[in-house]
Length: 116
Image (cartoon, rainbow, N blue to C red; front, side, top):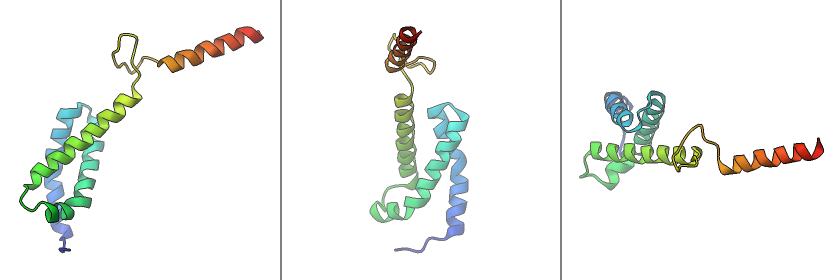
């Protein structure tokens, strides 16, 4: 295992941070989420940079960083897709409610009418 100079790593990550943010924001188009994802990318780079150098010494670091950015953005979209209901037209809509929620509302209405 090779010694990693913490000051050099810190300097590297600080220089890289604005570039990462720009690439993430271009993909996400949301300032707050882009900041969070940039943090996640920086953490992952910090955690895995040494292992990356050992396993792929000929691959440019920025190519690997772009791969990390892409993977984390894909994860972001996957979570967004799972949490955003689809309306009756098949379009994701953050204001639409799911069919399960409609069934629950109908059931509650029916129970209220039966007891009332």
